[in-house]
Length: 94
Image 1: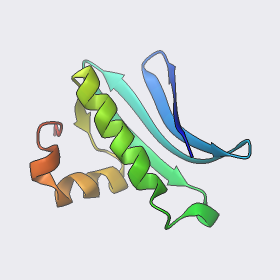
Image 2: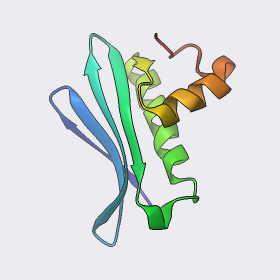
Image 3: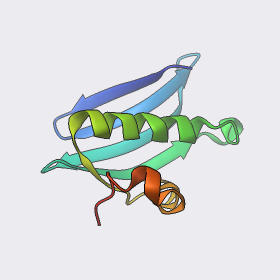
Image 4: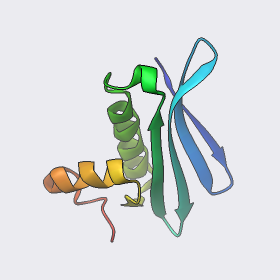
């Protein structure tokens, strides 16, 4: 499964499709070099396969490449940041 990205103005989405159906997404908005990651979702039949984690990793990679700080307003992303402050402290903005 390939992670794709769609950007429209200052909003974006990392997503995965399978057989033409979007099965997972991570939505974000960028303002003033702050990436607000506000939603992560995986279709129920694909949960538990590490897909949200792959989207998260792609978002982190993208934020670092672009020099963005991250506002983890999505509960899933916030929890990942809190569990690994040493790994993501360079990105986290409050």
